[in-house]
Length: 421
Image 1 (spheres, rainbow, N blue to C red):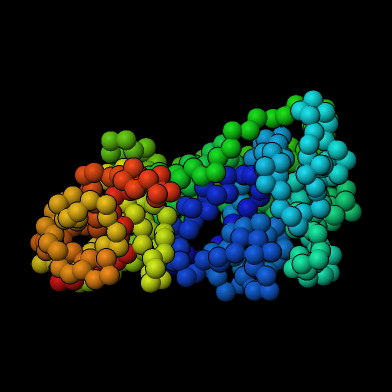
Image 2 (image 1 turned 60 degrees about the vertical axis):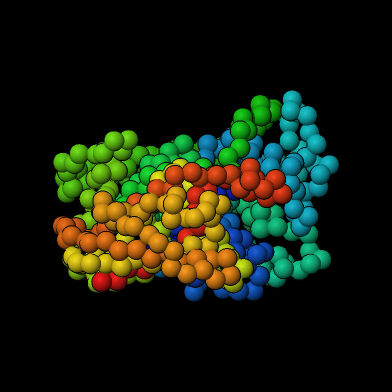
């Protein structure tokens, strides 16, 4: 069971990629759908197990018992990326106007833009309280103000020393501090803390190719953020070194498989140790709304009837880590939402701990189908079973239907897996 987790997302700091990792590891119903105060409206964030978004320190104050996770980026890159993003897509409720952003690359930022961007990462990590009625202001349709504006307003009342001290105190409070140049290692820290198996692929999302704009005076806008980034970087590397030391002592030695790192094998063993007291089960059910331990899957999607599903892909092979099954004859049902290759059973192969399952079509309704299969399971040490899916011919939907905007490579869309003796 995961603890309540708050991912304090600083803008333009690989937040979309990390959010995808975190979302995979929590049940869909337990994740706060809003990722900003404006989206949240008058709702509360306390009931959710996973809260991720641009909530800053005020979000942490409403989640005092949550594990805090945050990620920092090299400051000049971060404010450059934020500036370029605003030039492309400026929200109508922000105080800055398009004419404030039409600045030649060899010119300094205007005072209004400089005030907005100054030490933006420290603003998110060190600024609170805001004005008393700040949530009301954000929801007022006639009010042209954003959460970023309110942070900049409140930051002006703090000295640079006080802002840095407050932001560093937030990092000290955090369970995990990451830096964008080491996202894979950041996910290792997440797996280590929460007992998850190693994450084989990191979903790099919304990656920008911005480079620092060498504007006069830009370094003066990030002096606090520069110190804060150094502080976060030191914390990250110390935590990672300590993790490797503990894993080696408790879980080593290991022999990583082809294409895997030693730390992947150590994290897998660490996860097994955490759950090694779990007894094998006679039946199980996994749905796309549940946490995903595995790799080779696209994000959750919602079908027309409201049910959730996931496509395999983009590679031919996907896998799931599920609880260990008791030895004996096992029957498997697989609910298929969609597939561009028919019949599905001619293109899909499934094995559990290396035991192949032969599928036949069981039923079909409203375009969905259920495949049924059988295999003989043999007991083995360890708390998990590995389900391997191999779809021989993944496709790009748009290549089959030019009217389809989906350019991903997908195999088969699965909503539910059940197994029983």
